[in-house]
Every structure is written in structure tokens, then in C-alpha cells.
Image (tube, rainbow, N blue to C red; front, side, top):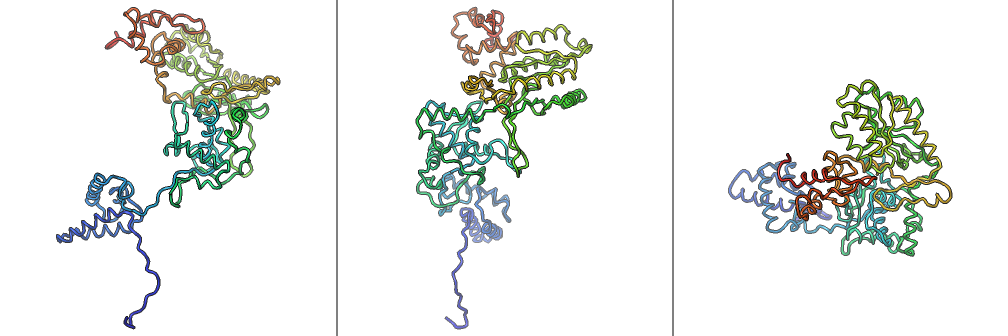
Length: 569
């Protein structure tokens, strides 16, 4: 070696490989072909190659390469055609990745998804697994009970997002569904584990019981070390749970496991006397829009009377009362923790005479009363405001309106309260609030679910002389009363039947008990021997408290509606 040449010491730095080897290979071939033919486009291909070498991320298709310099529509179209041809010959899984960055043969296997400990996904998997191990369990859980059970195993709230964030611990459920660990069915939604989710939850539970030292061991065999996917809803804050609270019910005797699960549900959703306050909830429609002066007068009257009320969106009814848990602010937090809210069994639909007239004409009156009956509250109230002389200038005769009010009380079973104006309405709401506050002041309130059977509870308190009430949560009540939510075939069938003149909710419900879908009704018609028998098929069905027959006229109308070919005359 000549002495004049300097000796270079040290390691030679390896050049990083291009994350898009297929695109690089095809561009190089295009450049070489253009160079052989003496075409100037070879320089364009060379510039595109330089840009591609500098780009550090894999590209899924040629359209994504348009963000790079010297990648125009022509080059992207050529690369897309080559990519589609490559997929047809080799398949999308060959050559690495689903996009144009294929060919990276040295990529490591991805780790199996494992939610972070005490995160939302981790808690949901554990709760569903433990519930499935209880003898006689139904194999699924509803959203409300799942949130209540999982909250004890999670550091983050399932209902209230952190400051500056819109996500809660419940947000991780969508990740579990996307990864085929959880399945969501029915309406209201039922959540259950898939086979993959059951296997993962079983391993997570074994880690909780201490049979494994580290949750990082919960991974598939033969995988290499790599940054794993974790649940972003997890939190590192919070104290460690006591070891005895983590013991899985399957380790205990079967009878003890089921009884403790029942007790945990009851105690977790129970409000003792003195731990809650009664609050009047006012639908925001009653305070905005329309006759703004009258609606503001209602709010002012309630404030003047010292009523503790809250304006919020109610999906059914205009006024109701909730028992809100008293919570104390936590030092260092901007907002106090959200307390439980249980809906009392009283709900009010307010109607002015002009509004009642309009709702009868357009059909809203029947639909609103039908929804009030199905909302889950046992004591609906119809608050009718008389408009004095204005009632005589409406589209319907006053006698018709008075008859509709009487029918609401006698036929529909609502309590009807007549008042003269907004002030009397506010006075009635004030008196009702004070009455309910006194009525429930010594009651132990227990949260029940409309979907679950036999979870009322509260017999121990009644034996000790303390009254107990079983109520639904406000969140479940308001969600179940959504007007335009997804409906079952049975619900749509009921709405269809109620469009028939003279066919009330009670009559529709009686028909649904025998024929829950149009298909079952049509099948019954096909089994009839004659037209006369088909017309009288529904006539002997009994409905209502008095168990009256539906009658041949209505039965014939329903038959004509569903079995007449062509337009009805």
C-alpha cells in the first residue's frame, strides 16, 4: 500500500435497507430499460428511486407514493399495475406486508394482543371470564352490569373520560371486538367472549392468581422479542388491589362463588338512606324554543320555589326525578367523581291543550303514550295545561280533547293532573319534589336492570323494617328510551299494527303474544281452511285488564292489511 494513501480505521457503516423493495426493484428495471433505449425518462426514474430510498416507511400501494417527489400519476399507475399482477401471481401475504413495501424477509412476528394490566380491556376480559365460570351463568353480560363489575379491576373510569381526553376505559371494548376477542349481539347489547377471548382471559386469570410471575409471559409460543401492542386506556396510577379481592370465584366452593357474585352486584349498586338526594330532571326542550317566555317562566318559578333541578336531554317524558348519590370532591381533581343516578318511578308528560290537539292529529299522542308505558317507570303522569278560552279555537272540538284526556286516565292508566297555567305546573312539580323527597328519605335504593330477571333484591332491609326500592339507572333508562334506536322485528311489527285505526297498544301487545312476527301471522293465515276463518282468526284474542275480545271487525281489517294482493280499497 503506498505510503501517501491514508489508512482508514473503524467499522464500515451499513446502509439501511429500503422498506419498499418491490417498488425499488421495479423502478430500477424501468430505469435500466429506458437507459438501453436512450430515453430521457431514465432520469425521472432515477430521481424517483432517490426519493424512495430516502423514505423510511413502508408503502401499502402506489397511491401513497404520490407524497414523494418525482412520483407522478404515470409512475404510480405503472407501479399499481405491477403490484396487482404480483398479488395475483404470489398472493398478498407473500413478499411481506399488504402493500408495496413487500419483500422484507427479516421482519419479526407480531406479538399476540395482550391488554395492559388494570386497563379497560384487561378488566372486561377478566369479568366476562369469571362470570362464565359461575354455575348456571347466562354466558353474556349487559353493558351496565359489565361496567359495574369491571370498574373494580380498572384504574380508569368506564363512564367519565380524563381531563383533556374523550376516551374512557370502555373505549377498549371496540379493540377487543376488532381483534375477535369479544362479540356483541342483540339489542340491548350483550357481550360475551369468543373462543380466542376465552383462552386469553383464562391465561390472564392465571396470572392474576399468581401461577405466573409476569403477565408478559402471556404470549404465543415461538414469538420473538418485540414492542407489543398494549391497551392505551390503561393507567399506571392507583393502588394495588387486595389479594383476596383477586381470588377467582372458581377457586372457591361453587355455592359460595355464586352467592358472593350476587352479593357483590347488590352491594355495588346500592344507595343507603342519607347517601343520596332527590333531584328533578327537566327536559331541555321545556326550557328552549317555542314560546320562550313561558318556558323561561317555568324555570324561574322552580328557582323561586327552591327546587333542586337539573336540565338535561330526556328521550321520553318532560320531567322525572332521580336519586343522585352524594359524592365529595377529591383533592387535586377539577371535577368531583360522578355519582350514581337511579330514576324514581314517576315520569311526567306535559301537554298544553294546543299541543295535545296537534299531537292527536299527527299521531304523536298515541306514540308518546306507548313509549311512556314501555320506558320502565311504573307511574306515568299526564300534566295537562288548560289554555282557557284558547281551547275553543283549536282544530278539534273541545269535547274531543276532553274525551282524549279521559281516555288517557281510564284506558291507558295514566294519572292525569289538570292545571291552568305554567305557574300551577311549577307549583305541582315543586309539591311532587318535596313529596318524593320525604317518601324516599328512609329508603334503601337498589339498582336493577330492565334486561335481567330477578335482580330486584332488598328482602333483608324489608325484614329489618327499612323500606327498599328497586330502580333502574338513569343511563340505562335514557338509552332504552331512544326513539330512533335499532328495533327488533317484534317492535317494528307492533308499530305497524298500531297504525291501524282502533288498534291500541294493549291490542297490539295481545296479538304479539301469539304472533310475534309478520311471518308467524302469515303462517297462521295459511293454515286456515277458508276466507271466513282467516278473517276471524284474531277475533277471539283477549286484551287489556278486562280481557275483552279483539272483535271480528278489527280481525278482518288486519287480515285485509297483510293478505290483500295489490292496493287496499
